[in-house]
Length: 244
Image 1 (cartoon, rainbow, N blue to C red):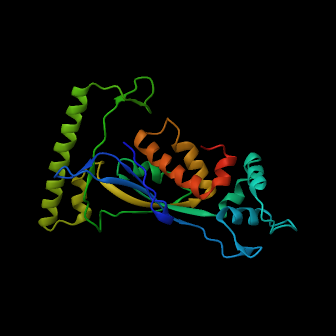
Image 2 (image 1 turned 60 degrees about the vertical axis):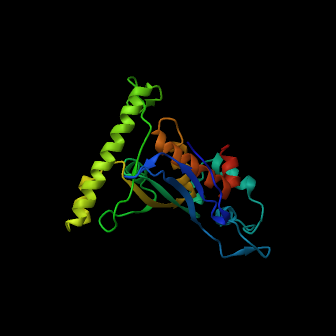
Image 3 (image 1 turned 180 degrees about the horizontal axis):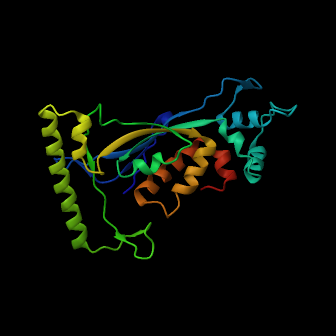
């Protein structure tokens, strides 16, 4: 179940997925805005917006480089696939997810990443997902039509495995075993945090791919929340892309 909470200038977007620890505490998963390129130059004594900077750089060969209006220009660049201008501005987001999903995110090589290190810090939580049935016609798809008894079995097994692995992991640390070794006991559902930085161009590609229904649901939900952040920060670009 998703819930959105906008917090001040950061426009922090939070959403809930069932996550638990050994005491069955529920935890909030998070996707939030960390930074956006902040232009230092002004046009008509007004600071440029991030999209204004994209347009300013796009007009590098124009005698009218400081024209303040840019809606039509950005729409033209998108329509004619002049993507290089959208590399002039970056956005960074923080994502809290599982080790099952983070490798999918890290596959997007045009981004720069920093991820929580289980070598240096103690793992804390393990996520719990609602099970879906494997689509027999499409290996990349799952269907939400499992019976209640199967769902309950899966929930019980997740709880059992999470408790067992966390107890073994914590015991290993108590025995002085290094975190980089003890982490082998942890499941793919172990919670992680990463920072993802990329250009507007990279974000456009990522969001077009990862909001598609062919993406795993848990990853798709992350991408949809990032899309909301992107649309708030780059409304002209989002409009030109016909995003809603």
